[in-house]
Image (cartoon, rainbow, N blue to C red):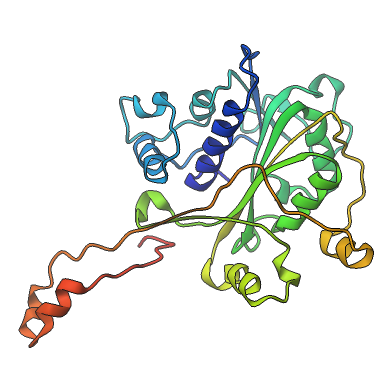
Length: 309
């Protein structure tokens, strides 16, 4: 997968939060490690305009780019977020990976341990057959206080990879292994660049599949029917207590069997939604119908444009 507007907004808000609560000391050079070698589907102008509409602070290097219609390169994007060095890890070097290692193989060379301030997984985990091994490698690559960002399909990606990743997998794995969970959202894939009429990030706040309450069940289970394609964005921070070896049991069953209170609270609020009326340019031919002129003045159509023609 390539960088899309949904995960770009998620990353920008995440880094803004991290910068706001940093200790204020001069930072060391920051390294971002990409799982795979992702491309980019976002442009400078549309991304900066989207951030303005969402009232999220945008770095001036994005807004000052001369060719605003150009796609933002993945390294340029992370450079604007404050990263200085970039490495891509992949099972082969066919896309120019800096680190050649199969994430299914748990024996990651020690020279690659604790090298990343941020790991960006833009849809690689679902292509790994042995997900537990891949997660352990992520833990090894990440520095203490470093952040892992996952972006994965949760609906509508049949045969895209081996798996569609459920939110509870990441929440329960990182929570059980004592990571600090920063935030996670579900986003309908809306191709904002082309539609410009709809954008949504929905904070995922409970294991709603098992909830009996109508409101929570109805809200989140609209995903299969209302969001033909949807992605999950998730972020967690490694702490001094973080591990990668704890065996996890799905939170719902831990709660039911041991009365453990499972919290889906996160550090960052990510709920965003944009709806825009579709402009009506010319309905003059409909004025031939008696009385339609008054209807025309009040007509306001809102469409969820998931896929442009």
